[in-house]
Amino acid sequence: DVKVTQSSRYLVKRTGEKVFLECVQDMDHENMFWYRQDPGLGLRLIYFSYDVKMKEKGDIPEGYSVSREKKERFSLILESASTNQTSMYLCASSSPGRPGYTFGSGTRLTVV
Amino acid sequence: SQQGEEDPQALSIQEGENATMNCSYKTSINNLQWYRQNSGRGLVHLILIRSNEREKHSGRLRVTLDTSKKSSSLLITASRAADTASYFCATNTGNQFYFGTGTSLTVIP
Image 1 (tube, rainbow over the protein chains, first blue to last red):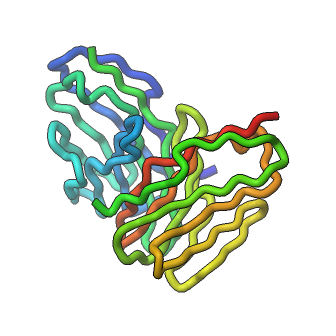
Image 2 (image 1 turned 60 degrees about the vertical axis):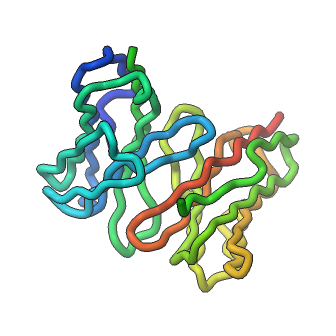
């Protein structure tokens, strides 16, 4: 069964910490995405990548960075976590010409 | 923002009834997709409709698309308690999708 795996379901971090959210897909997909989901705001795109070592800013990249050293892995980095980054983070992957995204189960991050 | 917008925000129906939710968007699209999200989980792709299609069926799901009105609807027939979830439309304008804020559907047994 093909899937996207996010390393943690729940995470609690302190303000100012550097936080790594990991995402791995086993479908050989070229495209990978990080979204955050907040009540009333829907899904907002943070960063995406169409290839290894390639990254593009989404709609809300401030306070985040990403790394894609291998095709199957896309990491989201919070350089200095803040309370307004408390959210559900969703990773997704896709392949050109195939319908739809495949999503991971999400990481609920709480910054205290 | 190209984000779609679902309507209603919340919907509560009895098991066996049909559920209809709508999506409006702002710009021209290549295709539109519907996703389901169970509480606290990731999104699951349900169905895709291309910009040159007007209607698509998949099991108990029926999707319509009106590009002149920039709107789509998702109909779930003969709803079940297991259909309780949030439903999102996503519009595609290239390699990216733009998601709406979702309709929360509750099916009462």
